Image (cartoon, rainbow, N blue to C red; front, side):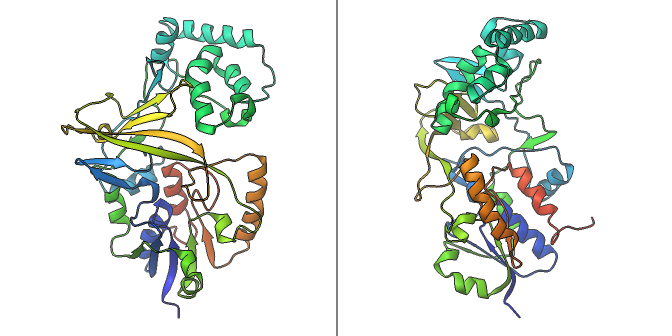
Length: 368
């Protein structure tokens, strides 16, 4: 008999949820993670009594009642509503695109006036078959919104001109003809009171967890101690990059403590002009309505991924999708390895998608 039923590689959301549900069904689990902390990219670092989202802003949102009740059974969530602001050369606009945005852009005061403005610009562009992201965006929302709120931000985010990016990246854009600054359409959203570490503390409670432990440092040993492996790391690394490396975009964070109680008045401010080198500034205390005397901000810089940097956003172009399919074919043939999560499946997931996938996993699903 093996020592464990499941070896879970990665203490991020997929791995921690899997371990929690597996333990609840009576399975023996070992969770390992090469980082010195659990929580994956949702980990919060406490600075000046502020829970700093170390790897970028994470706002939990979902319309799945089962998912929302599950996470709330583990810890309390606050009522934070994501209402980011766009800063274009010092002028501020509400996101997502809504009547507040349109009034600031054009001075319009009715939904019909806003619709007419967008319609005029779309017709003037005359784009019937968008060939790239620029044409796709203009055909959806017109030239003003594209130039002021999309172009610069997107080119910084992807490191390429919008005319070089596929139209498929922007299949649709959120446009609301109401004065509603709530970014998400989901029924529920919020941040764990006290930060995401509290969620992971509950998920991994009573489960053997070894941090600072790299699966690939002694793979033969780790493969020998469990009946099955749940792998949440990069799928190409699991197979020794035999077909080549998948590509990502990465993000660099420049975090500062400021001697002010309130720097920008909002948790998330996007900088949509091309001249500002960072894509956005996060002021972390606003996620939890903090009133500390100081504040902590993080500037985010998007850049090309290198082997020694953190992989954040899969680049799902034709080359990478074909490459991933080769790895997926290998993964699908495995009988003792379960692949799950953003890196193992080479696709971007919101947090609620991950929780839903684990809750619905055939080896864990309950009839409750």
